[in-house]
Image (cartoon, rainbow, N blue to C red):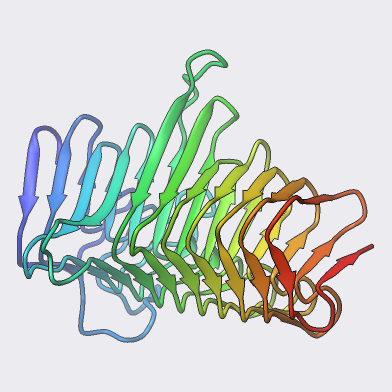
Length: 332
C-alpha cells in the first residue's frame, strides 16, 4: 500500500514471502490500511508457524509491516484474523503477525455493536511473536520527540511464540524516538510462549495500561512470563486491568522490572508463579504502588508477592500485598 487508503473486509492473503518487510501486506509512510475482516495467513492452523511451515513470511512483519496507519478492527459480525505467519530470526527486525515501524500508528479495537473481536494467533518471530513495534527513526530531539504508537483496546493476541516477547515486543532507537503501547478495554494477551519474556516486553519505551488482561503466558527457560520492563528510559503506568496465571521458569511471573520507573495502581496481580518474585520482581529501577492488590502468587524460592533486589526501590503507599507464598515481600 503505497498511498491512500486500502480496505480489507474479507478474503484471504496467504502463502507470500518478502525478503524485507511485510510478507502479506506492507504499508508505506502516509498510507492507510483498514482491516475489518478477512484473514492474513491461515486461520485453520493451531500450531506455531516455523521457517519451514508457515503462511506469509518476511524479515520484519510476517503478516503485515506498517510505516503508516494500520487499523485492525471488528465491525458488526466481521472478525479480522492474522494467523500462522513467520517474522524471521532477525533480532533487529521482527514481528510474526504485525510489525509497526517508524512513524506508524497501529490500532486494534472493535466498533460499538461488534459481536466478535480481532485475533492475532499462532505467529512466530524472534522478537514479538504477535506484534512488534520499533521506532527506528533518528529525527527526534529532546524538545520534539517522535512516537510510534500501538493502541490495543480490544481483541486477543494469543498462542504466539518468540524468543523474546511472545505476544508483544516494543523498542526504540534512542530516548528521543519513543515506542509506546497503550493497553485498555477488553484487550487480552494470553497463552503466548517465549524463551524469556513470554507476554509483553517494553524495551526502553512506554507502557500505559488502563485495562485489559495479560494472563496464562509462560516461559520455556527464562524470566518474565507476564510483563517485562527494561532498558532506559523505560516508563510504565499500570492503572487498571489484570495480570494473572503467568508462569516463569526463573524470576518474575507477573511483572519483571529490569530498569525504569513503574507506577502501579488499581491492578490485580494474582496466581502467577516463578522461582523468585512470582507477582513482581524488581531487579533495578523504581516501583511505586499506590493501589491494587498482589495476592495468591507462588514462588518456589523467595518473594511470592514482591522480590526486591538490593539497590532497587519498592515504594508501597497503598494497595495490598497479601496471601502470597512463601512471603509477601522479600528484600535482599
